[in-house]
Image (cartoon, rainbow, N blue to C red; front, side, top):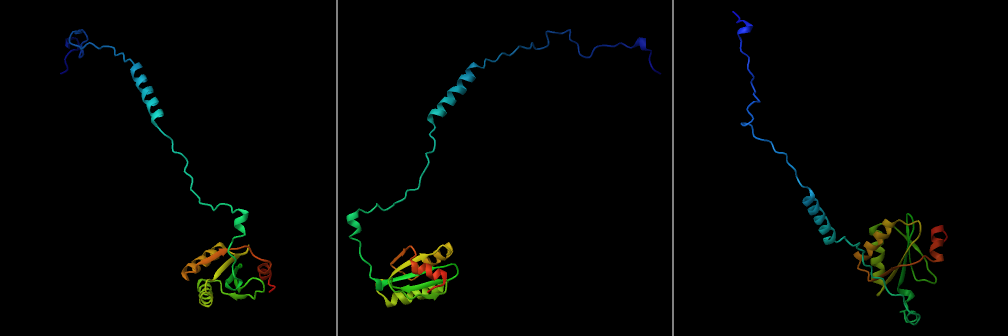
Length: 174
């Protein structure tokens, strides 16, 4: 059934004898100098053509320091038109005048402050409000006072340093 091994002809499947049929392989030699030159030219171009962002500062408009002659020309404020609002930690005091004040406590909420401001604005033409936040007051309460002043359309108001009377209010001595 099986043929004799001596009778089988064995041949090579891939013959390398035929060198003419094979494509001759050439060695490739790539010159990298032009590519390096181009890379450095591009790098140099982008470095010279690029501008870095300059730091941007917010412009503040600050009033000039007044001259001594201008300080004397300041408009005096009538004491009868001045109202002081003292902000404490959980309450606020409201009083009229500067020399002999009599403070009354008002609720430290939007409605209470607006009601006091509206009543004072109706009673006094050209009202000036001095806002005096003490160290125990919250920033949120100060913002609420500014909102109330805008709601009642108060024309003149300012932040002011607390006086001795205001500090006595904080300590509970009226």
